[in-house]
Amino acid sequence: MAQDFKKLASSVVDAVGGVGNVTNLTHCMTRLRFILKDEAKASDETVKNIPGVMGLVKQGGQYQIIIGNNVAAAYKEILALGVDGGATVDASEQPKQKWTLKRVGMTILDAIIGTMTPLIPAIIGGSMVKLLQCCC
Image (cartoon, rainbow, N blue to C red; front, side):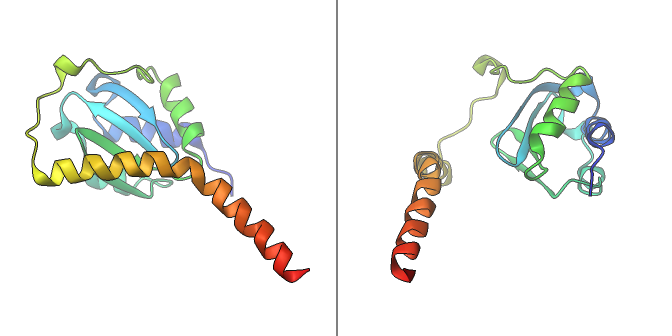
């Protein structure tokens, strides 16, 4: 089923408060990661009900919209609407956060996940080779 990413992009930008409310936009494998000027302008329920959006997560000062494997196409269309993307955000603009036990744990887990994620394809490939050796 073909998806209209222009319509998705327009709906997402409107739901997060418009182009003027977005400070920065990046994406990862499955999520659009917005840095918003005023998170109160974003409508969580509207975002969740947009066709093509799989979910919403607010974490680490980011407003993360889960799109899935086609996130690059959605990102490209949102940039075409005039949203600033890809640039790093000045650390002085973000409020300082206290170091709590939970935040320390999350930082450690993020570091472990970041180092292990690139190894997953190699592990899967090795498993497939081992499977073929067993079968033949």
